Amino acid sequence: MSRRHPVTEFARYLRTETVGGMVLLGATAVALIWANSPLSDAYFGLRDLGAGPLTVGGWAKDGLLAIFFFVAGLELKRELVVGELSTFKAAVLPVVAALGGMIVPALTALTLAWGSPGIEKAWAIPVATDIAFALGVLALTASGLPSSLRIFLLSLAVVDDLGAIIVIAVLFTSHFNVLAALLVVVLLAAYWFLQHKRISSPWLYVPIAVATWWFMHESGIHATIAGVALALLTRVRRDPYENEAPAIRLEHRLQPWSAGLAVPAFALFAAGVPVNGAALSALFSDKIAMGVIAGLLVGKMVGIVGSSALAVGLRLAVWPSGAGPRDIVAVAMLGGVGFTVSLLIADLSLPDPDTAKAAVLLASLAASLLAAVLLIRRSRAHGTMSE
Image 1 (cartoon, rainbow, N blue to C red):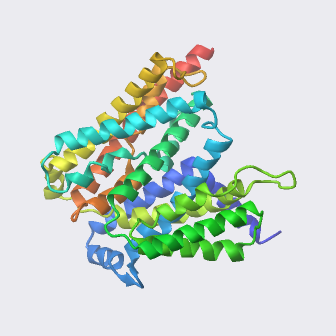
Image 2: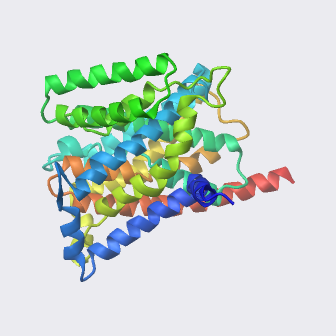
Image 3: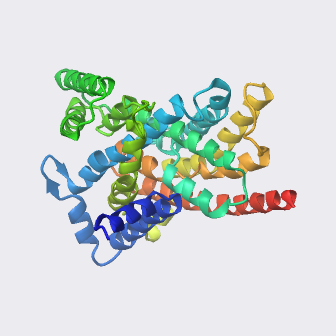
């Protein structure tokens, strides 16, 4: 048998949503245990170890996470061009729900933490929904629910992440190197030209992608934005002679690397926060931490459900096929699973982000458990109705 078969099977395994969520959860658990063990000095020493222009943790945050954003960007481009977001009517509900699920949590955090040092940027921490965790919980608990709800959650999370990416680009550009930014534009134009001319050689694309990432980093704009920019320039319509369009092929090949390496490595170095009596008490005395928890657990639910009901009430959209408001409530609870991007924004927005990151972890865990209960109940209700 071919030696490549086990690798192919392993890649296929990593593409499943439940496995991606479990790997992410495992990396988080390792980080928390390691950072709170007698070997914690080794953990923080490794995270802060210099490796060229960045630390090891910096490479995970700025480098590997660009792969995650590239894969998310490919999925967004596909949905916008040929998928669920390609028509106005189909796109309205998840887009409006995503906007509500960003605005209300941000306002919640800003209101509760008004006047706290760092809130001028930390209000953005609860705006994001973690695609991997949310879809993993949905896959584990909602076998009896209509498939349209998965598409709704996926579309919502992708739009949500796009909004978070824009927030990162606007809020966290501390300096701006015009020459580096111009080189990014030139490289992106070259990438688009190669796509337009149907050139497929990785010997051209890989150097362009790496150079785009580097000059994006040097420009002062967060380097992960390079992943999204390249993804949105990737062709998603298949030519007659192609088995797959480039975006589909790249998403298929890179998704296991994103789920199996990039996101877990980021979680390993981002989720290692002290969990002791002082840290836990700070969660409920720190205004920013309280704002993050309330934003993810309450703001997300209110924003997603309220904006969805408003869009349907105004006849701008319809509920997902076979689903209703109660199903949206259960899915909306998954919006409170902030994790990956929320941890990234916490790192970027605060000089000492440990308390805010602990708040993200606590809120994401609570949202997962509450959503699981609601989804199981709705799944049973749909099973009863189908009998």
